[in-house]
Length: 277
Image (tube, rainbow, N blue to C red):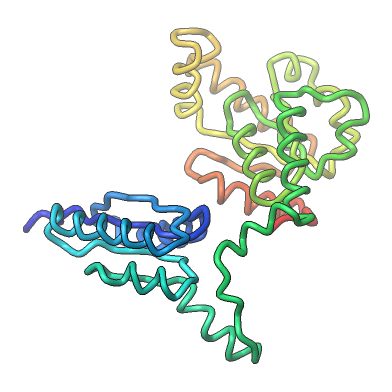
């Protein structure tokens, strides 16, 4: 069986490229045997930049011996035309969706470059910035009395089970104010939730993780410590799960799940009224 050639994939946008990259990754994930080299090309917002990008695409084709794949969210017809002078498989995400939307809505789109940049002036953007600041200020159990009233969700779980990255992802993507509290041996000995968490039971969501994976993560932080030992990880996880069951806290095993999957489950379970999008 011949070796699958490495194929260069370009994510081209007149803005940040997040849309092109997100959808592109979702589609490429359906081809696990593929070998891809990724190139990000954001802010291609004039013809000269599009010509330069087309040159890079030609060079990649020559080096790889196969046509590159280009995921594009360019909206200017001139930059699109300049880009298409290179030989590649072009997947123009806006072209595929804007046409049907124009037909359905009975109106022309603006085809304006950088429309997404206007988000900086929107209420949604303001919510997300506030949520990020909230997540950082209420990380790892740092909260004063009454501050959790403002939280949309409060994540609980043993140290290094994924609470902080999930909190920040919820904030950045959805404008959700997420605090997080570590469950520690002292909580298990007291047989109760830390601080005032019992007052915010409806906002609580737990994360757990496989002991082997937790030990591996903790070894990177504190090698050869009791904190990172497999025995201690098993004890903490078992105690945390018993506490969450007793307190009737909804929880999820994060071991094999991405932050996106964890966040989607939290949003569906806690029923957060998201200001973001």
